[in-house]
Length: 117
Image 1 (cartoon, rainbow, N blue to C red):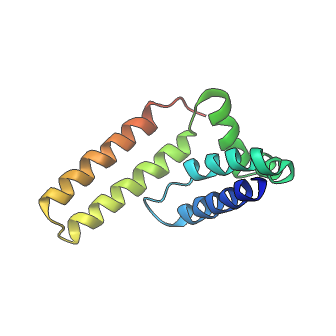
Image 2: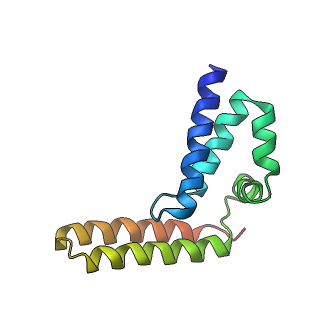
């Protein structure tokens, strides 16, 4: 089972890293998921992730206070706004835009109601 946990951890970490670049692919949830999987598979990988200068603080913020860094909140808001604007400019159907607006608004409410890290 440790091999499967490690593979899921590596997959989650990969998706999190890709999410740094790709809008709407969330980084933080995938990094938190990777930490969960690594904790069950490899002390070395788990320790590396917790000590990582970029990922470690966000994991610690979430684990200790359920918090999201204000800088990450602002970047998330800009990304969500850009994606919605792109959808609008592309001329998606109104129903799709409404569904997207409701979903993205719910995500932003969740993000902005978390404590600051």
